[in-house]
Amino acid sequence: RAPSDAPPPSHRPALVGIDIGVGASCVFPLLGHRLYGWDFVGTDIDQETLSWAHLNAHLNGCCEHISFVRSPADSIFAHLLENRDNEHPFTFTMCNPPFFDKDERRSVYKERVTTGGNQELETCGGELEFAKKMFSESLAHPQAVRMFTCMLGKKASFKALRHVLDENSEVTVVHTQRFFQGRTARWGVAWSFLPVPVEQTGEHEGAGWDDGGSGEDSE
Image (cartoon, rainbow, N blue to C red):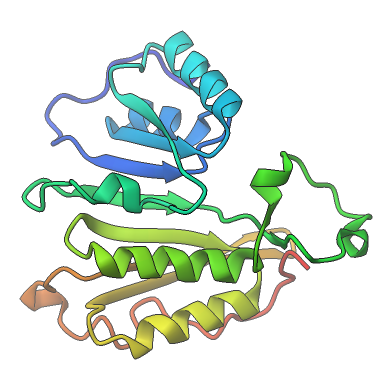
């Protein structure tokens, strides 16, 4: 169950996030709603995964605040954004893209412990191509989400995506952050196309920027 059965604070405005690849546990929407009062749309390409996620939301009394949508194979979140009213955008997206390239020899990683089904671990082109597709879809619907985010497991992927964002003049804000668990590093990347408040001008040039730093990535 979620960490608390207390109702979310009522004085906070409703924020709506999209959890891409929500997973059977539905853990991030459950935490986000219970701790902060956020609403979520959880997506996945696997119907059985969504069924388990829905059950977990039901068991935690969150069905009114967490909905689920099965994603088509050719869309990450574009199918959710096409008819979204720009006056009522989603607040954010979150995603930990599949790490492996489908053509990659996973025997290299046989000493690493991995969990999850193939659709959670593998995608054509690996995490970088997935993240680039995310950016492409966000570019087509720039006003439908306030902040697009994803987390990457390779420093090379992080640097490549950062370069893509920096080269696009329509991006108004970029934030990056390293996370560590022991010696293992992950990189969070967030971007937006919305106008930058006056007090935050200049953030696109290096907000939260680092060069990837030290620490081992998922390889």
